[in-house]
Image (cartoon, rainbow, N blue to C red):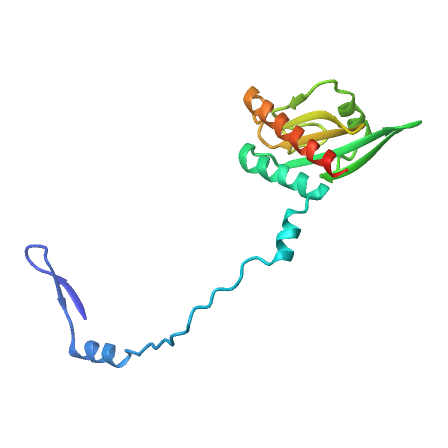
Length: 178
């Protein structure tokens, strides 16, 4: 096969007979067998019952999934606290906050608080903003800490109110499970 240009810049393609015969020899046949389509049952009764069954972890996982896809949330931590002679923190779900001093500070906030730092928070450098709220249900206090790598994630008032509503709904579901 050869390609050349004519006087008027038109392309001329010459095809040799040997190229055509080689192409004809390499041609193969493809065959397919017909099979009958038989749909399978998608759900059985047992799987539906398991899907409807709520657990503590599934409630928090659903809450985190809805927030992470909408508001760029990268981490969640849920703790409870019992005050005896000292504060006793129990992690219920999510990431671990290493310092008990930070947990005490977060539990002491009276209202929903947003912490931001453009260079990152001191206890964790890759987290630039945190949303911290305390919620009470069935005589238990829940500390909810949402983390984001974006500085401006929680600064919008509408976003903060929507997250608070979703968090209250999650805690209400937990209260119904108890």
